[in-house]
Image: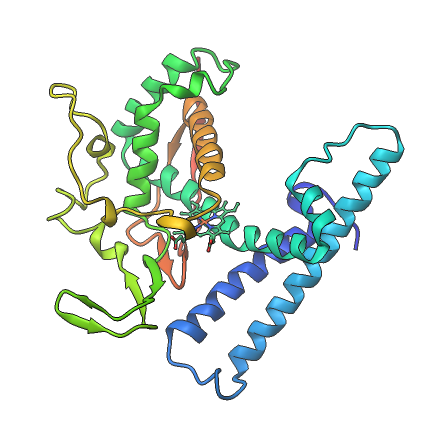
Amino acid sequence: MGLTSGINNHDALRLFELIKLAFRYTFKLDFQPSMWKYISTPTFRKMMSVLDESLEVAQRLLKETQDTLEKRRQAGEEINSNSMLQRMMKVDPKLATIMSLDTMFAGVDATSNLLSAVLLCLAKNPEKQGKLREELLNIMPTKDSPLNEETMKDMPYLRAVIKEALRTYPNGLGNFRVCPTDVTLSGYNVPKGSIVVLGSNALLQDNSLYSEAEKFLPERWLRDPETGKKTPFNAFSFLPFGFGPRMCIGKRLVDLEIETSVAKLIRNFQVEFNYDASRPFKTFFFMEPAIPFRFKFTDIEH
Ligand code: HEM
């Protein structure tokens, strides 16, 4: 199977499909009642075959990447041998494969869902989209204005929009932890070893924590222009990337990817979504699109 680039890369497309299936089966096996720990159920066998195929695809993609790099090196090109992949390959090719797969599993759907969520929120709230464009036009006055570390420092409204989209359409059910000791939570004795879910999904829609929770209000994340103060909120109710030593390792990558994509798209296009969006996502283990995201993009003239 040859490595074709862009959206026609067969292996990449298959990997995306496998990731979706793995999340669905995880939901069935680990969130719904299942006997898989005692007998090999049909879903368990499907999960094993999805994981086996994912490993095969990842190994093939990594080998192709290694071969391409080797060819370029032999052709005299200077290759960055300090890249994370190169360094991991030297330590242990197995580790490199597993880390690459983990990164794909954890990152692909979450990031694309967030981009769809941000665009949907802005399409359904044109006034907020206009306000964001105003901020972006100041930073990128022309279509070819560069977006770099310096210019991206001053984009508070963009960051507030992304936070509010994460609040409106959280990526999953919440945060999970296994209790290392017996604990008492709100009067309930929770024994050591129990899985505890901090159900952010519900907290983020709670009016006592977020006033007018049903509204898309990026302003809630900004300092009050008059007092200069931020609206206080319970930091543990909003943990889209988790917390502590096991928090998301991809957060900075996501920040960069989403901020640049949204900035460029909204700077250059008016985004509309002219269909029903009352239930755009469904949640299994993670959320996934429940409708096709057929956005309409219209060029901004200047
Ligand atoms: C919008 C995008 C993303 C969201 C909302 C997100 C969210 C999360 C959350 C909530 C966790 C669990 C953290 C915890 O339990 O404290 C997590 C873990 C993780 N994420 Fe992400 N993530 C995103 C994208 C990515 C990307 C792009 C990558 C890879 C480059 C990635 C790699 C990981 C890994 C490897 C873990 C497991 C960390 C560990 O268990 O030590 N994530 N993510």
